[in-house]
Length: 182
Image 1 (cartoon, rainbow, N blue to C red):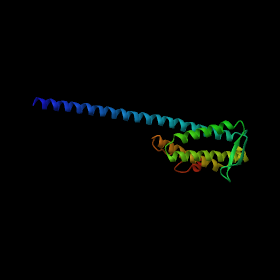
Image 2 (cartoon, rainbow, N blue to C red):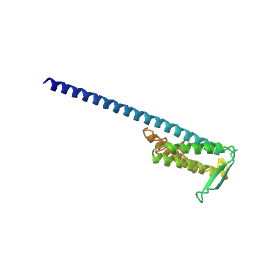
Image 3 (cartoon, one colour):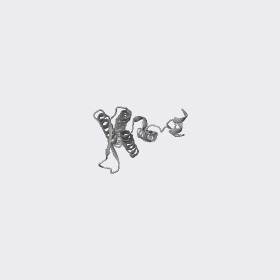
Image 4 (cartoon, rainbow, N blue to C red):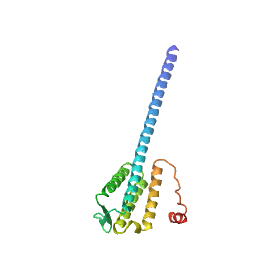
């Protein structure tokens, strides 16, 4: 009886060690995955923040009365124009392209990718229009389109970062109506 009792005690102790080791490994793995997710969330947030700053500075440059912009046919997309900046505007274009590429590298969601591409396309359209018109003559529709795709980008980025969806001011009545009421 003493051998059986000793054997049972040893098996129970061994099972306890195995279960304790498995729980420890499981907890370490869970913490590692959580840290990994947090690091990627921080990387994405930094990329989205840089992209937002880059396209806003791009638009600010385009609206500068001294900006020298021309529009040439896009070699990849027949029928579309491509904005070309002078030496002063080239850093804004390069920063936008770099920031957009960074977002494309780190985003997980097709919605974020699509929204990023739409923002880039929209700001390029503003630059294309600015190539033939003064900053004061730019049609408001180009900015309404930008605000719409900007909002889609922000919503997609918030969702990807695990933040709650929000309603932007004026969304329920449309931006032009909100703008006219002020």
